[in-house]
Length: 311
Ligand code: GZL
Image 1 (cartoon, rainbow, N blue to C red):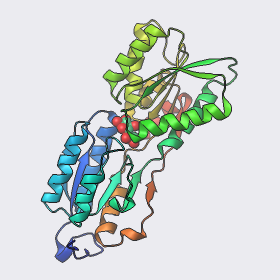
Image 2 (image 1 turned 90 degrees about the vertical axis):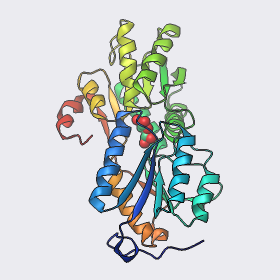
Image 3 (image 1 turned 120 degrees about the vertical axis):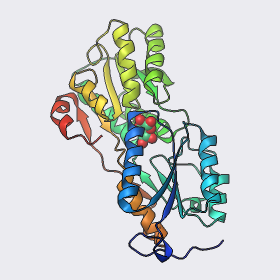
Image 4 (image 1 turned 90 degrees about the horizontal axis):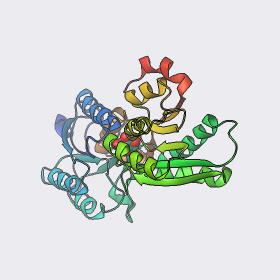
């Protein structure tokens, strides 16, 4: 394939031309996604990188089309957050054949050929699932006997959905034989999905004691259904969620969400640094996974943390 001449280290392209980055975003399904999109756009501008951006509305075929369009436009680097983990080898092989390096951000892919992308800039979702279980241990302190749990899963087939469920189940299996997941279904990471699925859960299982939601938007939707059922979220039904978006912290400060596993969406700066490194021909110096730093929060910390939250 035609190798591009490596750019100068200041991040400009060959012969001073700005680097052109083609970015395919999952969609605009949640507060997390909105913050992630803003971070990518603001960071590209700050880095002097020419950004081509597309929103796939959570459809894999739209992401594949966008990547093909970036290949046809001969962008310097392609980056995307894959909506689901499978089905990428063909289009990634086309990018490789065109000599365009690919950087994954946020979510990972399953592939038989590790050369199809340089690195992943994103969180460890399995660890987030384990952290959610440990936060539930704190919230349940002193509780004895069976704990009936409902789980609102993220988008079916998406890395965060698969891995958060896996991490949570791992701690359950290892330490909590008395925790039972009595209902588990995807709410597709949206508020509407969380509200609708939680309403169905409560119809079938009025005895739910805990909700583990794979993101704050589904938890916020579920809160509406819990209240409609005449129950108090955070009290009658304890809620553990993931992300840490503003509205999640507001709900937590009201005691409606008991604890949140932060999943940092502000990946833009790290992504742009990675784009420059890759474009300068130094991709081989990068780790295979550039992990995001993030914390955990319980309701007692929410009010104090709110003013300094960046998303
Ligand atoms: C996680 C990200 C997930 C968030 C959701 O990194 O992929 O997608 O947890 C978002 O809020 O929709």
